[in-house]
Length: 125
Image 1 (cartoon, one colour):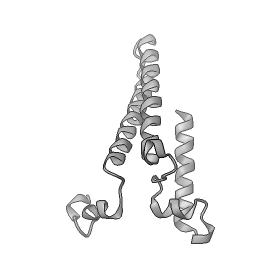
Image 2: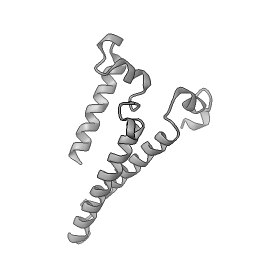
Image 3: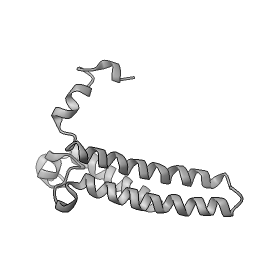
């Protein structure tokens, strides 16, 4: 779980740097930046990187759910392990969301356009 937090922080730092950097100073590749930060096509058997994230999150998240549940049950249902269970379950659901994005073919500008605030202000709270 600590590795997940660390990798997420690293990813966020990379995204923030690339958004604010000039085109020739980006840390990521130009094609990766243009396609979207989660949309690499390097993983052909799995479709895009969404397919890879789906597999990783569902498999690893499920193992964490199982491990945390076993610890929770063994330690007389310690409340502190409930957070671990919730985070692990979120990891699985995050993977399922990546799988859905892969299934619809990604989140291109055309797919997202109807949800932008100027098109659908009721989505913004």
